Structure formats: structure tokens, C-alpha cells
Length: 144
Length: 144
DNA sequence: ATTTATGCAAATCGTTTGCAAACCT
DNA sequence: AGGTTTGCAAACGATTTGCATAAAT
Image (cartoon, rainbow over the protein chains, first blue to last red):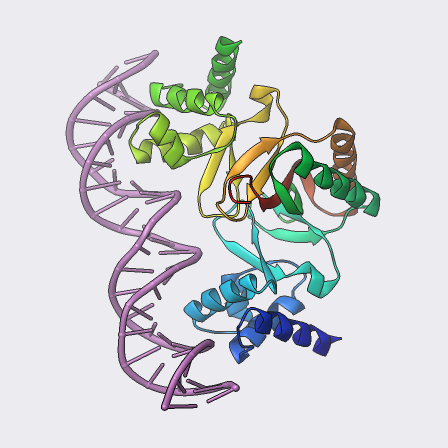
């Protein structure tokens, strides 16, 4: 199933007209091994790479829907593997003190309600929703 | 009730050891008149002010819990009045194409479920949640 | 061969900060 | 007077980009 991930990534990149290079594979592997979204600096600590390559390739991986950019409350962009690649729909706990972002899940009943609500939006507004973002914002264990 | 807003702002600033200056009042008035979070550039269009004053005062207003910083998917910070000052709890529709952020509300039953879920988080994790952020991300009317 | 990715260094741009003058109490 | 805010200009820092080289097909 680890290979399955890379096959899927390869397919998505190809669909976007992009190659699956070693730098991109590195980034995917680093994100795969993390249990939360990583800042670019964090990915570079785990697998050194020129900064510009990390930025450029993460942007490409995002366009190909392989990774997903997560915005917290601080100034750092964070990335995680797209949920379809991990089969792990989740949400984020965001610490207002240190900016840390961690994953967690909510009851599936709540997820269903969210999806249903999302479906109603298109009819009530001109907006076409694609996904939802639910975060809980507060103080993390370390900062509390 | 418009005066009530400014009294509340004054009280919150005072509690934070800050004054309610004319620049700060300008910013509060601009945000009050908007029906969605505004970027700093947008506040300056509506009420010209040196950029640095806008940045500094919005930061102070945020510390005093008068305004709230909203993070979308683009690189611009957005600000809105704190919900307790407007009695208008809401969520955001975020356009992935142009970055626009608009307000909307969800059924109160969903809100109650969200609050209940939030209450359970503290016991399951070391995280102490203070508020939630629920956004629907997709394509806005203009970009669709 | 031709196209695409890489890596370095320089540029970009939203945001932050230093400092002297203006303001408030 | 004593401390705070202001406004300008300069600095900052995460991110982006230009360009020559290396890699992939």
C-alpha cells in the first residue's frame, strides 16, 4: 500500500503533465511519515533540499492534488498529503500560542451533517463548495 | 447601539491597557460597515491611513479581542470585528480562485453539535479549544 | 535533441520595526 | 512633563523567480 501511494501520486502528476522526480518523491515520503501538516522548514529538516525546490515542488504537488496546503494562524504555510491519498479525513487543532497544528477526527455523524449543510449552500448562494475546513482553535498541551 | 459598539471597544482596549485613538476608531468603523472580512488594503481604500498604522493598530485591536484575524487561502490577512461585538456568529465561504472571503451562517443545530464536539476535545486530548473555525472552500459566484 | 527540473542567488512583497515628531492626559 | 501613538522610511522574512546547469525522455 505504500507503493500504491506512489502509484497514485505518479498518476496524478502525470494527469497534470508533471513528472515524479526524486525531489517530489522525497517530499511525498516526508509528508507520508508525518502525523500532522508540516511547515516547509520542517520538511527540510527531515530531508534536506534546496528551499526553492521545496517551494516549487510543493506548489506543483498541490496543483496535482497530491498535497494540500494548510493555513494556520501563524505566517508559515503547512502541507499534508491530500486526504484521498491517506484515506484519513481529519481536522486540525490549531494552537494560538505556538502555531502548532495537529490532526484529529470528529464523529462521523458530525461529518455527515457538515456534508449535508455544504450541499445546501450551492442552492442558497452562488457559491459552489468543494470541501470543508473545520478547525478547533485554542491552546495546545505544551502551551497550556 | 452603534455607540454601544464603541463603548465595548473602549472597554476592551482599556482592559488591555490601550487607548481608543482616532485611527483605531476608523478601523473599527470600517470593519463595522463591512459584511465580510477585509484585507488591510481594503480597509485603507475605504479610510486612508498610513499602512504601518493600520498594521499596528489592527494588531493591538486583535490583542484586545476587538477584531479577529481571518486566514484564507491566499497571502492576505483579513480582519473582522470580533463576533461578540456584532452578535453575529458566522462562517466563511472561501474562493480558491480569487481568494475572496464572504460570510454565511449554518443551522443552529449544527452549531450546537460543533460546540458539543469541541467540549469533548479537552478530555480526549491535551488541547484546550476556545473556538471553532468552519469554512466552506470552493468557487465563488464571480469565478464560477 | 528537446523539454523539464534543479540549485544558487537575487528579487518580491506583505508585514514589521526604528526613530523623531505629534498627541493625549 | 511622561508616556503613547503616529508617520515616514528602512528592514525583515517567507516565498518567488531568473538563469545557467543537470537530468529525464
